[in-house]
Amino acid sequence: MMLIHRHGSPCPFCSTSDVRPSRPRRLEWLLGLLSIRPHRCRLCNLRYWTLNLRTAPRLLLAVVVLAGAGLLLWWMLTAAALMGTPG
Image (cartoon, rainbow, N blue to C red; front, side, top):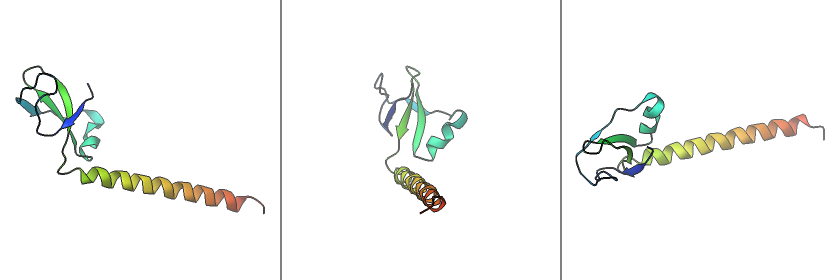
């Protein structure tokens, strides 16, 4: 189940505070770079994700870097297309 919840809050399903960090699976560690971490409730066994607001600026930085890279790629492709057309 993909559910993003605020870090440090109780389980979104059963409301218990008996939760623990869960191990990331396969490529889920990439979400850790964005301050999104998996947790598991010990009572109902729900696995969900939390967003750590203290380290969330990494999320903003990642979005800005990816947007900048996309803009740069678009600019390079547009410039190459314009240079290739006879004027």
